[in-house]
Length: 230
Image (tube, rainbow, N blue to C red; front, side, top):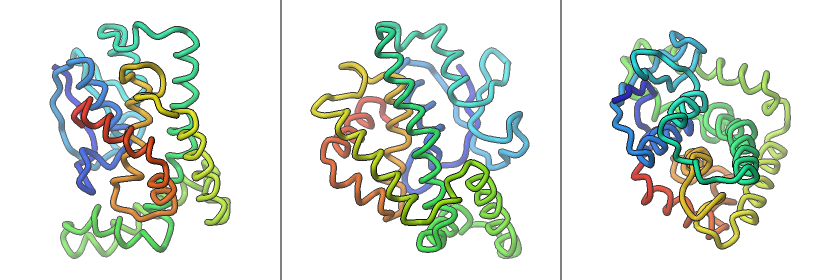
């Protein structure tokens, strides 16, 4: 058994972190027994983020590094060709290094949706903590999003760039069940983790609306959930 330390569930999802959903989905598909530990003190983790995993009494941080370590044993993607791995890697990078920051922007920075996120993430805090914790966490998200570059753009441009990526994902998926092969792969776990947060993550953002216009992506999200159970 491995132990997963991650943020608590939110918005009716197994997790509001695409990376946590990716990791749980991989474990489910690879038949890896795991135990969830929910926490919010990501700043105490080795790389200042969650999820982390304890595998053979060794702590590993970063969902991709965790999956790389597990893949050496469980080999979920063992039948993929080098070209399929390359395609999967590029799609994962698109989702985790570009689209993810649009999700951060919509939840933490966009004034239209921040009240929803604030209530979901901090609504159960004691009254005195609500006075400063939500705004402190929001400032941290803004700083990270500005450092990465997304929040340096206008709101309209941020959503337009994200929607363009959603459109391209729909074209690439076409009428296939999954993005890389006929079976769900670790790359699908990453793509699914991000897309389900857009579609089912409690925010009626322009990205969700664009996603809903692509029937194949909506069906893909449902198919991934049915396949991995996360």
